[in-house]
Image (cartoon, rainbow, N blue to C red):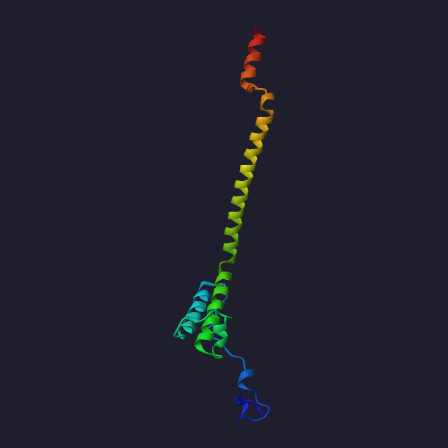
Length: 146
């Protein structure tokens, strides 16, 4: 038996699903207008749901009938959350790496000061005070001229 979409057509003619569909709402991905179009589309679908949708994949979600506004809204909310995280992924990773780098540097600084202090405590009594070059040069010049 042929599908309803092909009934009433002569054999060999193309079905409606095999003809290319021209989408007038195609927007280049990654652009600001694509983001706004995606969010507007998601908003329209979620608004059809009369109550807050259940969490996607939860028991309440599975209990909803297929194609119900609540089930669709839950899927759209989950998809939008995933897409939104992808929108800011590079920025989020950069921020996380910067925070880790600062924390590592701060820890390195603390460890350096601890090692420096331990070294000074152990070897500080052996240190020799070296006069600055200008002072040494002045003294040598004075000694040479006398």
